[in-house]
Image (cartoon, rainbow, N blue to C red; front, side, top):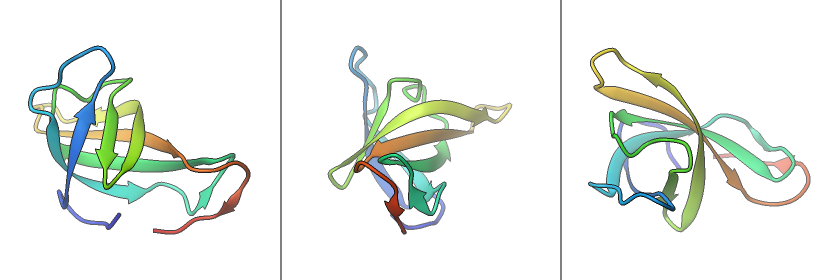
Length: 97
């Protein structure tokens, strides 16, 4: 996953709600340099999307990131920042993007 503004087109999935539109253009950056207890943390930023809430999953290139928190929505609802995690392995191992 590269760093950059709105470089990724991802699919948004929610277990109980149909998301329309189901895609989102965003930037995804690693929030940590390591996997800690099998979890890698990420920050996703893009134009505001009403489907981004807790329990939303971000699916990108076969990987699934789980939204943990909506950290910031600008006052005009033009941009949203969310924290998300991916369960990748057990234990603590070096991790880089």
